[in-house]
Each structure stands twice: as structure tokens, then as C-alpha cells.
Image (cartoon, rainbow, N blue to C red; front, side, top):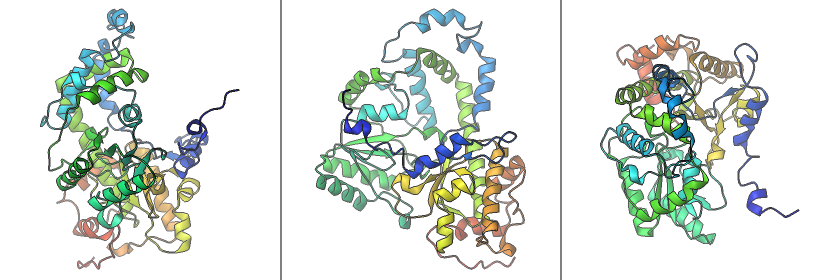
Length: 434
């Protein structure tokens, strides 16, 4: 039998890393409110289930969008046959228009420059796989040199961090060809500010390397940034990407359905606004609920389907063990992603996805966290200084609406959100009396 390559047989995928511990536990014992109420809740998958009802309603009203229905079967023959691997013109046109709408129509995208792939990973491989790159995210360690960021500056990308990563790659005899960034960030959920973008562009120009922007979560931003979007053209990259895209095509059936859906301007406008509102409310309630039991989160989170939380608020040896990835999985029964799987060297940081479940499951997850904290007597928030709305078992729809209104939020809660739980800061004495 012929031998396989070192890349194929190596541990580059990280299957044995802490990132996959929770996934394996979830696959063995997934949570179900009736059949497995003590099962593991999936909070490691970054997907948006909050908007599915919006899409479902559209599909019910437009059965002709699928040729698997009586109304759409007339399109079966022309859609099922082989299509140009560049993608259907209707599909690329609809995607280009949607990308512009997501960014407030501040930029326009040329459909002829859109290359489709089977997911974001496929797109990464098309444009980055042949080259050594600098990267700020979890990825294969064989061809990359990660840019290290720290909590002392909210994990922002600095010029020194970029330069250090570049030097490290050179010392490893890697010729760096590009810089890969996710924006909004995965796992932080933050958005690159104007100054950071300027520094990044300055850096790649100085080094004469490519900049690869992963903006797969752009439509999940629920708080608008203060800058526009830079969109550059590179004919050589587009030409090469189209050739390589034949290895990971999108089915013509999927293209036809998505093109029909995204061509409905009324639906797209409603979808973007409703989805952002739902994500904003869930994020607000999720981070507020964690703060009530002393768990902080990155304050600069303004988008995405997940939160970057700090659960290492007690410095005792016992609590560090409890708040490890194994503690979340085995005792709290939640699948979360440890910071170490994203190359974070500081203990206590986790990526927690909050948009991939319904309201009742979210309540169960929050209740488990609260019970675990109370059980171990580690809650650091004085009970007298908690907001009156301290119970985690509340009506999400009503509680979230209340939290959105600053006027309806008691002064103590506003103070807590602003100062009390920001990671890296010493606790401040509340000047207001409870």
C-alpha cells in the first residue's frame, strides 16, 4: 500500500486539540429538552438560527424558488444540467447586490469578479493555500505564523504584533506572501477600526504582500462601524481563483434558490434589519446575564454570532481547573471553544456562540452556568449591588426588550455594564448606593 503524505497523516487539523473535546462530547450526548435534558449544549458552532424563521416564511410564500415543488419543477431540466463552474450569472449578480446592501450600499461589487466556493474554508484554500501567510485566527499550523494579540489592549492588532509575526515566519524560513484577517473577528466578534485598517494596509504595502479579508460574518454586524469598506481588484487573483474553484463548486440547485431569494429586495431589506435586531437583543441579554454572575466579556464586541468571554475571574488554583475547557464540558455540559484553540496564551478566555439555539435552550445554558458558579461559591458580585432583575430564568422576549431601553435599565446595571466586568481592570467601588 502506498504511503500517505506527512500533511495527510499529521495532526495539522487539530483533531486532538481542546477545540474538539466539546464537539466529541456533544456528538456522544447532544442536549434535547425532553429526551436528553442533561446532554451537552452546543455553543461551539458559529451559525445564526435566530433568522431561520424569516427565511422559512419566504420559502413558504415562494415555492417556485425550488424545482422540488410543483410550482418550480418546470426549471428542473435547465437547472439540473451541468452549469459553468464560474457560477450562474443570476447567482453572482444577486450575491454582489446583497454584499453591497449588507455594507449599507457604500460600495458596489462587480458580479464578474465574484468567484464561488463551497464555504469559507474553500475560499481560503483557493486564495491562500499555496502561500505561507500571517493569520489572526485558528488555522492549520503548517504554513502560517499567527499574529499574537493581548487582552491588555482588547486584542487589537498592532504594528509591533504584525512585525513580530513576520520576523518569526522569516526565522522559520517561510517566505510570507500574505496576511489573512477576519472582520468581524473570529473569535472576538470585534470590528477593525479605521486606524487598525490603515496600519494593516501600511504593513502589507511595506512588505509587498497580499491582504486576504475574511468577511463571512459581515451580515451579522448589529452595531455599525465608523468607517467604509475598501474593495480592491486584482485580475491575476480572480483568474487563478476561478480556475481553482472547480474543486469546490456550489450546486446549481443551491445557486438557483439563493439567487431567487436574494433578488427579492423587500425580503433582503427586511432580513438584514430583523436579523440584526435579533442578534443585538440576544447578545445584550447573553452578556448581561453572564455579568450578573461575575463573568466578563470583551466590551468592544459589536457583531457576529458569538462572544469572547473571560471566565478566569478568580485566581485560585481550584477555579482555574473548574473554568478550563474540561470544566465547561464535563460539569456545566456546554461545548465552548477554549481560547487556546485560537492561539490565545492567556488562560480563562472562551468563544461562546449564542445565536445557534432557541430561547429556551439559551435559558438552560445560562441556568447551568449560574448554578455552577453558585455551587462553587465563586460569584464575585455582591448580591445587594445586583440589578433587581437578577434571575436568569426570565422571559427572553420581554427581558431583552427591557434591556434595549437605557431608560428602563436601573442605574446599577448601567454602571455594571460600563465598568464592573471589563476584563483586565480592577473592580471599582460603585459610587451609587443600592
